[in-house]
Image (cartoon, rainbow, N blue to C red; front, side, top):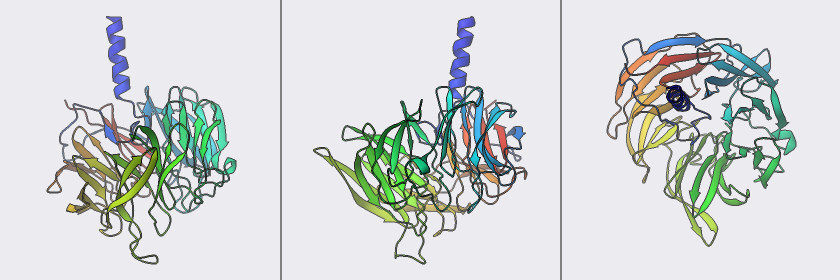
Length: 418
């Protein structure tokens, strides 16, 4: 009986894990089941509210969760701080990871990543740290901008880290490397992709296999590129510019095609800068190439707000549609329909067939049924007004709970079906 209880508990804890931004596989799709299919007028039950995750507009980082611990970051008294909480929202420990970002739109950016018994954080100023999950004790620390002669971005480093096997991937965008793989146990460089001559993008890397080669692809200031995951060899690059060099939505790969997007800027720059674009990735005798398939200025997600479901791209556009919920055909880029203007940068996630979206500038939470023909809202409610700043931290559904971050506040809702 004891063994059975242990197995059930282990399975429960594993189901509640969300170890990186958008999950380990980067799909932003939760494996949770037995969730509420609609909410009452006031929304699902609020289990707890954790405050003091920094001060003021403390940050835009989401949460990562493993073995009953929640991790996020926030600014406190001019410092960038990693916070550990338990599943009741109580603070367990915190770690000072250097000076806070005081440039445009102050606040923390990257979501911590967890692997084995360690949690990793990248600050907007390049401080990369490995901490013990249980205690917050530092294992190793380095600055990727200093070590690889990188130039910081306009809005500070915002990439959420990706860990695969023993490799931790990060983008210094420096003279000595555009992308590096570090040994997650020591922080020592395994390989470095030569410089592309520009700073980093703002997105989490994507990992996939094509042509028999395992590839890690990510963005940089002027587009996206992919490298051999074992060697760091540059396999391909694709130019996709933005007026302010903001490529913040990581590449989406599906059956030989890649999609990337930034917001379209019709003013002050070259005609047609930005938007969404799909390319075909081909391999011949070990050589890779990319060819543009379609481009659409209306499919222009930013800050990671794009998802592929059943042949359709679900996005929230930024400039061209004023933050409209937009659905497009994956194969052609043709717009299926646009829904409400939910607000530029409105983040969403998927669980058990439904989308959970937060309106970026209103704090309204929408439960949406993916629909190829119309904007289909099942339920909606407003968050309590405890935090500050826009609502652009990405929500997480795991362990039959919905986690929403706003400023220095974290909300936890019960979304389990009775």
